[in-house]
Length: 66
View 1 (cartoon, rainbow, N blue to C red):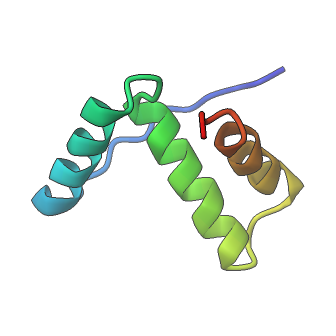
View 2: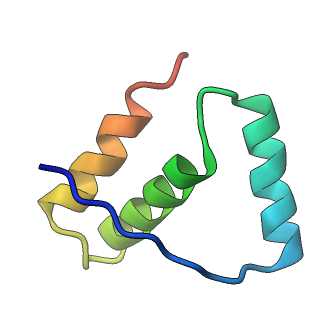
């Protein structure tokens, strides 16, 4: 069972603009998917991610068209 939680956070405007631009160009992604991928990649790269974090990132990344 996948349980999701909602996170409310503030980000710099230039980061928001970059995410919005990415989403405009990649209509198969949504904001929730971008942030979930970003958090799982951050945790994986910084040694705090468990297998689930790595798996979530790799799962979504492998779904992208070439």
